[in-house]
Amino acid sequence: MSRRVVVVGAGITGLTVAYRISHAPVAAEVLVVETDPEPGGVIRSVRAGDLELEAGPDSFLVRKPWAMDLCYELELEGELVPQGATASQILTPRGLLPVPPGRLGVPASAIAVARWKGMSVTARLRAMAEPVVPRRHGDRDTSVGALLRRRLGRGATKALVGPLLAGIYAGDIDRLSVESAFPELARWEREFGSLRAGVRAKTLPVRRVPAGPATPFATIRGGLHRLPDALADALGRSRLRMGSTVVKLGREEHGPFRVVTADGEDLPADAVVLTTPAATSADLLAEVAPAASERIREIRSASTAIALFVYPKGTNRLLPEASGFVTPRGSMPITAATAVSKKWPRQAFGSRAVLRAFVGGAGLEDELDHADEEILSSAQRALAAAYRLSAEPEHAVLVRWPGSMPQYAVGHLDLVSAIDASLPAGLYVAGGAYRGIGIPDRIREAGAIADRVVRQG
Image (cartoon, rainbow, N blue to C red; front, side, top):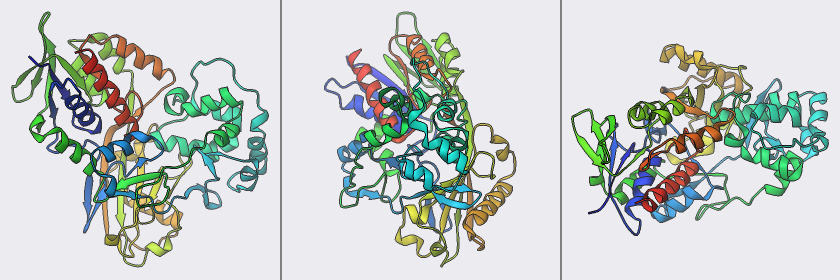
């Protein structure tokens, strides 16, 4: 009799876990249970006027191979779209300035630092001296902010590198773990004694999208939702139980797990993989794994929102040839913006400017306490100030993401190890709360969890 595996959650993580298990040499019977009516989780689109726009992530990092490899496996390689404008900007007292060449906001050369006018001469001189700062000994985790200030100084941390890295996690760099969020920084210091030397030594060639140029990011023609849709098709839609909410997880003595849904189904399972948000997983584990449940509750998440704007014809030419910008913490009611019509140009846009603005995040969630119309109005004013864009948008949509961005606090890796150790055999947790938030990291972790499920069968 084949084993039965229940995967809770049909986001990119849950779908990939189920797909990998179902295609393993010794396949198990797999069922995915999901509250929403459609698969994809945070990967979904929203309509703004006549346009379908990304309401969650808009792309994936090409340099990390797992998403690209999965697209090839699902025969989506011909649908991959390379990034248009690739330059990124940062808001400074001088206006929008390009981010110096480098990686993770760390400039690759002293000349690039010296020429960047977004901070004072004193701050530039301090950042230029980074290679002579003694390396930190020991491998104890520290915050991103502490590492950056120690190596680059306060000026460069506040004006340049901090806003870029905080934006990725919608987080506070003084709480974010280096080892969990940006392990490259710690590794560069350990191996090379300098972040700048690490950037130069570890800058990898960017992979090329088929029939397109080398590009940092890629998306899929027609919308990123085509990736979870393709996974669902490859898995088999009959294995997806959509619109069904898991409300309880129990276990018979020396018997299988019991996955109970809101509509009264009681599903037996030899293995269960929870890919739900951390708070939901903690609730479901309270009975069968109370120690793991309590540890998962220590993982905090920040709430965010995305404001989408479609401007009139002729406005796209007013935007700089850049993918978007980030803002220093607290300097504007938005934390970042994407110039969608520059980063992902497509015929449907015509000559219209299409913009996404990001609101909220760790410590900035009070911005989300207002009504949608107020948030949209505030974000629009911020975009107008940054881009000197006087036109009124023709369409505006706000998408709220409560508790959507896990915050990897200092010591996060140890916490994840403790969670894994406290789970009984046959029970697994996966998702953005644990081992990386980007789509490639989600696919990588999902493959590793699927391997564990298969091996322990």
